Image (cartoon, rainbow, N blue to C red; front, side, top):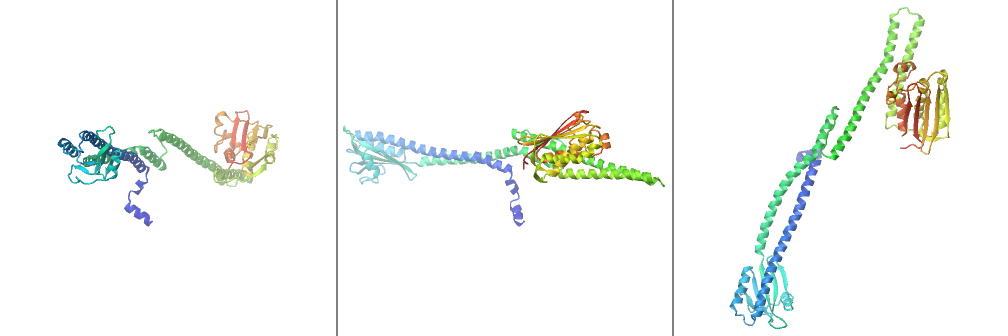
Length: 482
């Protein structure tokens, strides 16, 4: 807590530095500045090297021309040639440098600085030059030093002397510093413009997310109206479409929830209202006969049973809807399992003189939750009996392949109209409410059945038409898929 307080005190905008907006801005800024810095450094380095190389080539060319003139005029034998001496001085002044003329005995014959005349110069570069190898090197970042051989007039063109010349690079360094300063100003200005552009682009790129965040915030507050409409780019459009699909499902769930609450309220209040009417009728009739009391109490008992059935089915449905509920899966003989269900319901079928037939093409074993699937298949068979005609029939068949087993429940009953087939698995939905009221039931049986089948990673489908009977087909994996 103390660390959080310090962070908020010294870094009040720390949350911004963790935002996507800031990260995009930094990335765009670095993507623009790093290449600019690299290119600028490469350009400055190439410019410096090229300038030094060009200066060296210019000095070398001038020295070679001068060496040719010195050799032709036998200057080493007659160093008093004022014309050539003037050219040496002029060349040294032109490049703000110094020129030494060295003979074969390594004596300095001419020094434009007049400091080393008459002295001996034994250096590695001079020795190499007497062997016919010219040299050029950059010394201390201040000047270029080079050697050029002086050849005689003889046929062998032997080296009779060496020109040791140096040229100052101060003017190059001044121009380089000016260029460096200009580049730094250009980079600073460009960085500022790039930062402004990065801020603009990051805000523009994050704008759809802000719009989405505001929309979701309104959604959290309970505003389910409207759709998310973001079409800035393909990705945000895809997110918008996906989110709208999710929102449509949420709206449908909300409508289903409201309808479910309304239906539950209605279904629970109806028996209570009936009991209230029956009780009030008894209270206003003083001295009513015992037979009337018994009749009314019988009706009240039936309404209590009906209320209890609704509550039991609701609890069962809520329990099966819980995603965290684990199935008690065990390997079960499905043939014996279905025979037990039919045996339990056979007395109900006999009351309506309905024939019940079980057909099995093979012996089937599967990993199932016996309790939940027993409730599901009992609902299907019981509905086939209840919504059947007198002297009708109900057939239950079992088959399997290498992956699934299939249970088909068909009957000769009143059937289901085509317009109702899409709604029969909804809670409290009834095809014929008046007839269903006479038969009984809560309208939750098929919802419970579908929930149990889906929990087994199975599927259920229905084929029916009004007056033509109904066929429910259930497919369940032989091995439970976790």
